[in-house]
Length: 104
Image 1 (cartoon, rainbow, N blue to C red):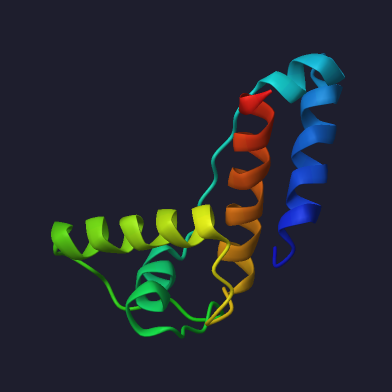
Image 2 (image 1 turned 60 degrees about the vertical axis):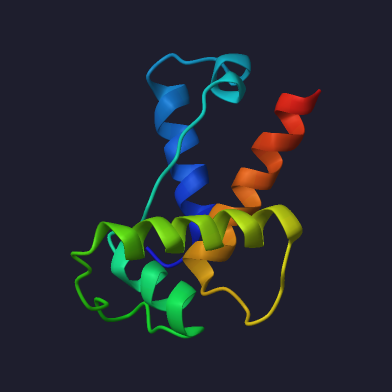
């Protein structure tokens, strides 16, 4: 599925169908990563990736850590360039909404 918002709607509908109330659903935190984590790392290291193909495998924990730190910094500061690929943009927006909700 290419559209993160569509995934969110489908996930919410499935939860509601299982008896989870709207209020309960809003209190639950879900963190999803597409099966293209390597693409995220590739993008964060190089500034580009193609999410239609699997990125190169990363076996060095330090590279993964550094990419995660870069992602956190970009999400916190809403850094726009280079533009995120769709799955990263969606994840960052969700993280920012979660932070807002938790701050009250």
